[in-house]
Length: 214
Image 1: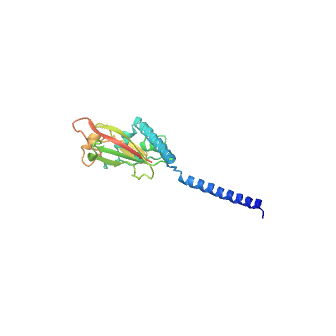
Image 2: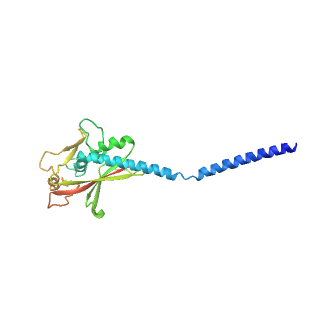
Image 3: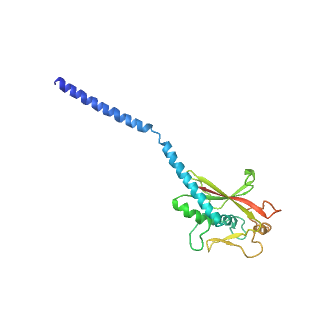
């Protein structure tokens, strides 16, 4: 084998070694790249988009008085608790369009989001005097969640609603005398879960509807 052949083999070996070094450097470099900033930014954008959607839904529900109805729709004549179906949604039809759950489902459930709705009542500015009642089946968030709230001012004269399973919606109680918040509160055994916060005025209570979505 001549000197030129030896040099050719040496160049070939050097080329192979160089290619291996470059490939190794590329692999190590890719492994060292931190993709978290891009991932976190994407997650933040999705979370903010979800927050905006929930805010829009609650604004629409507020305009249609669906939030007030959700807070004052009871689960039967002798049950002071709220009915969960009013916020859990259901089949939308020509007569049931303004129920809180349907408004939420129209935007969130159809986009594969999940949610739980709570009513915070009592003294909403004092955590020690705050009561929380879920008006959907409570579920634990399986990913990053957002919380959006709306306050509702209730008055003594506000009507009581009860869920009509045949219609699939809340209907105003018109029979009997105990069909307002104040009159139902004064009837033992038929009171409501929200208590009168100021018995000396027409103000019944200030409650907060809280939607946790993910």
